[in-house]
Length: 451
Ligand code: GLU
Image 1: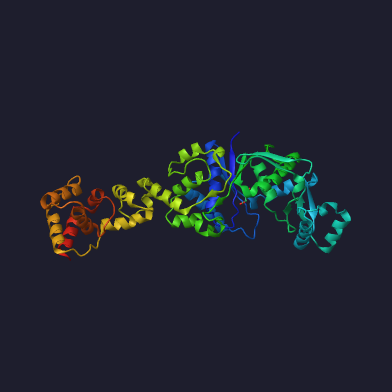
Image 2 (image 1 turned 90 degrees about the horizontal axis):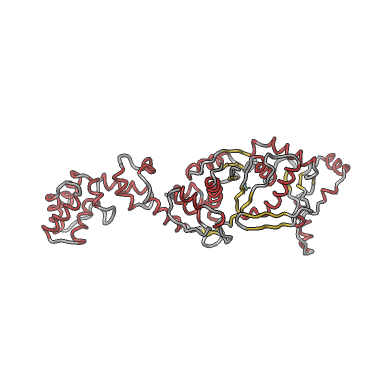
């Protein structure tokens, strides 16, 4: 059976490290098994869903190299939900309720006050046709709940958490549809997973109790003749991502894919970190996706929260930038910056965009510091002895060492300062050929003249 996984974001905001991680794991799982990775836009909440977020999600996934093999959106599938709902209604698995939010809150408080779990009392199930007619006459529309089967204990082997058990009698029958006919998350998601042949549902552990309810939904849908495969998907719930100081939720704005991209984070750095954070595998600057795919294994996932540390992401990012090929960055480099320049400058970069600063050092003009007389004489000598061969820097420094007896900093630093205007930077062996003979001589002469 082909593995089918899905990433199901609600387009109510930007993707951030937490949901990127879930998307990545679903993608890795599909790729590991030669399967399909689907994007499902969970946009049944028309008020909160926005088209700009749908577009941002697509763009972010493309940037991350997690392009889906197919895309669906819930708002285009309402007829399918209506059909499944009709079947569940016929089978007596959904029922009408009329309580207001305040009434429900009161019921909860009463139960909690008696030390009882705040489980819905199923008052809606006891309503007669006459009751429904009365509500209808008042113009009160019902909302709908899914009736859990209290005689069918819920169990599954979670891909990360191991064997899970739930007693359905300890759960409230979930509201699945509002009085205005709109859908809540729970049922459409189960319908979609059944209808799209999803084999593996991988998501955060905040969904564990939803899974318990959805397992009964799947079973009820299959029994009502809905769904192609009629087998439950496998479920795996990963531990949540937390910041160094606890919850990430407050900082998620700065941890969106687009904010990270603007800060120079490479997709490969984010992918390398998130692929393995919270697993027993070492987090390493692995730029080769194939390695991440081949080593991806739910069995390596731990149950403790995974700690996200921006400093760790930055470290990985530097290491990844130092591995990037010219072809991977060419379209982000300043005009004229070729492969030799990229390779010379790359080891000095923290982010790809910093290359522009170093490229300005190559193209000039540069501002050397003011030198003393002695140093200016030294630089004049440098301009006159400079020859241009395979490694002009080696030739220049060797000639100056012989001629002046200078060594170490006294030999190198004034040259670097005159040639680049800086005290540090890329390896001069690589940089000097990029500057070129004429410009190099001109810079040395200018510094010697103190102009
Ligand atoms: N839209 C849901 C969410 O973002 C999807 C959860 C799921 O994977 O089923 O939490």
